[in-house]
Length: 299
Image 1 (cartoon, one colour):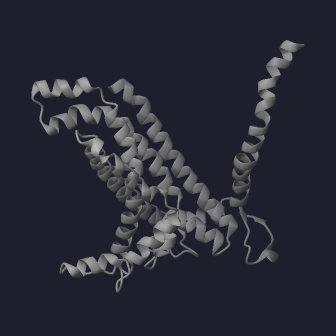
Image 2 (tube, rainbow, N blue to C red; image 1 turned 90 degrees about the vertical axis):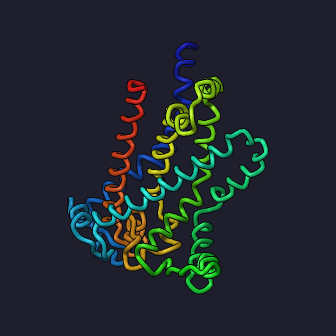
Image 3 (cartoon, rainbow, N blue to C red; image 1 turned 30 degrees about the vertical axis):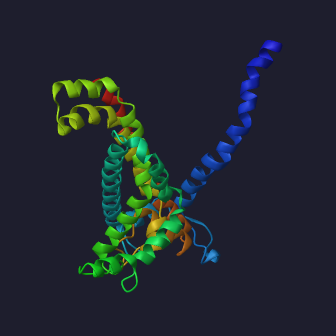
C-alpha cells in the first residue's frame, strides 16, 4: 500500500498546477475557438450569440470592415515592422556585445547597467517617451535635427516615417535583450579559438566569420524566435505612439485584434482574428524548431 501511495503522490502534487493550466490556458483557447464561430457584439447584446461557422474567418481574410484594412495588408505591415525591429535589435545588439566582450570589457562593466535600463521600463512608458520625442514642433529629435541644420520630418504624420518611428522605439527598448544573449554567447567561446586565430594571423573579418558566427548562431536563432513571437502578439507601442495611423499605415495585426475586441466590441470577429494570429505564431515556431534541429547535423 505504501508503495502505491508513493507512486500516486507525485501526480497528486501536480493536480494544482494542472488545474491552473487548464483554467488559465486550455479553457480560454477552447472558449475563444467557440466564440470565433459565432457572431457576438457587446454593442448590441439583444442580437444574442448566433452561430455563423467560418464567416468570421472569411470576413477577416477578405474584408477590412470595420477596421479599414484587410488582414493580408495588415500582415504585410506586421512583417515590415518585425523585419525592421529584428534587424535593428540584432545588429546593434551584436555591435554592443562585441564592444563589451573586448579587451577593455572590465572598464565597461558599469555601463552594462545603463544598457539594461530601456528593457526595464514598461512598454507604455517607452511609447509615451518616444511619442513626445517625435513631436514635430517641440520634440527632442526635431530640435536636435534643426540645431545641426537638417530638415525635421513629421514623424507621426507620414506613413513611412510613422513605421520607422515604431521600429526605432522598439529597437531602443529591446537592444538590451539581444545584447545580453549575444554577450553571453561571445564570452562562452573558448579562449584557445582566439589564440589559434592570433597565431594564424587571422584578420577581424576572418575571426568574425569563422569563430564568432559559428559559436553564436544559436544565440541569433533564440533572439529571432523570442522577439519574433513577441512582435507578432504585442500592440503596446503601436497603440501608444501612432494608434495605428496615420490612416492605417501602422495597423499591425495585434493592434487590429485589440481594436476589434475593445473598440468595436465584435467579440466573435476578434476571436477569429486572434486565432489567425495564433496560427501564424505556430508556423513561425515550427519553422525555427526545424532549423534548430537541423543545425547539429549541418555543423
